[in-house]
Length: 206
Image 1 (cartoon, rainbow, N blue to C red):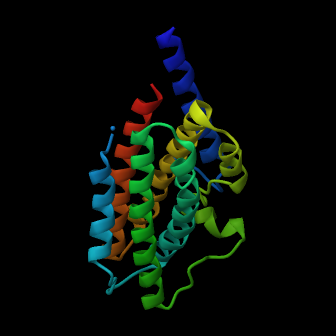
Image 2: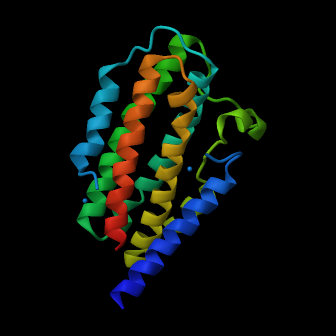
């Protein structure tokens, strides 16, 4: 019975992650990490508020897309504070919230330094050459918000896993084509921390 339950949980993760990746304009895709690992990214991001030096369109597009994606993630993880029952899930969600707020603050500051807007606009075609917008829809977040107890935790973890898969996939924009070292270092930290978070959440599901 336990094996069947694990298979069902894993299947839901795969289906949901795939659905979200396909919903983007294109495709490419926070105990795993203990809370300390999640918050480590926040302290590193906060330590370098300046992003001077050369930058290109990929750096700008990554920051614009990541800011929106991070804010969607914050909306999602805030749900765990009042709806999750397991303390480890609440702790992980809280650590993710702190990390992503710090990263958003840094990214907004860098764009301001460069004289670039926080958003690239609402036209989905803007993201066609950057792997898609990788967003998590408000409707999916609202659906999770309508659940409680164990049902909430399962839906929450599945959606957050898919969301963080998209965060990992999004880093390809700048890790492969970016010019600004500060932005590339942030993308690498995001890649590492979100990958660890996904591993941890899969353990919570099983």
